[in-house]
Image (cartoon, rainbow, N blue to C red):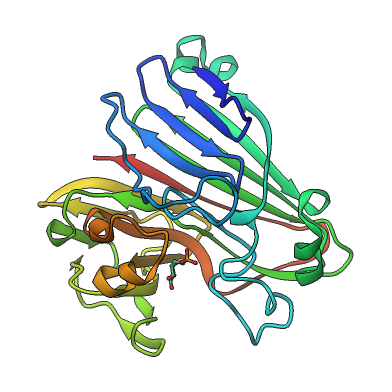
Length: 301
Ligand code: BG6
């Protein structure tokens, strides 16, 4: 695999010998592109997304930490902006690795892992004022021929406990939202954020999107049971989680898309669906020295 930096050092690109590729911005460690061996893009990225570090990226896979949305009543994270600071901080590239040594030379061509780090020392002063805990984050993006794994490890480096939430906010690219069904959610309890945060139970085995949708599901099968995105009855993406109990399903639909300055084109809501793996219903408490690890693997087709 080849791993290259953009001229301005803002972006890392990894390409497998067979042509699959992934691009990660150091800003937010945001995955902004994932292509298969045909060069077909799998992630939706707004044409209006800011990639210059002035605003969280609208599209790709932004990383949500340490708070999902805002939590004005939560003492520790109450002052933080929506979705925290990981997606708006500049991360460090820690290196690449392949599986060559473990599995022979051929295995090296089949995958590449990129590691990124963010810790107390590298966040800006404003963030430290809003959230004053010593922490360390390691984010790994592993590109395989037909899958992408993104994994986050949060470590509490402080001498007091802290509470956090994490979410991998994936924007999937699709052809037509009216042909999409999401499976794996039947029977799950969910918070309906477009209906006063009321708690409901999903009755459908094949969820369709017909208007603004913003729901926090806790699937009954646990993280290893796949949540799939189908289009015209065919599985496009399958998401398996590790240690992340919740799945947010989000589509802004017409009016909300119009209201977001960086959402373009405005019809773009037809070509995206966010299915986001996370731990966001309640809080993960990390004692000093403890770590929390969560991951998702997205498999194609
Ligand atoms: C989703 C939330 O995860 O992210 C939505 O559930 C939110 O409520 C969406 O609108 C986008 O958030 P942002 O901060 O990127 O505009």
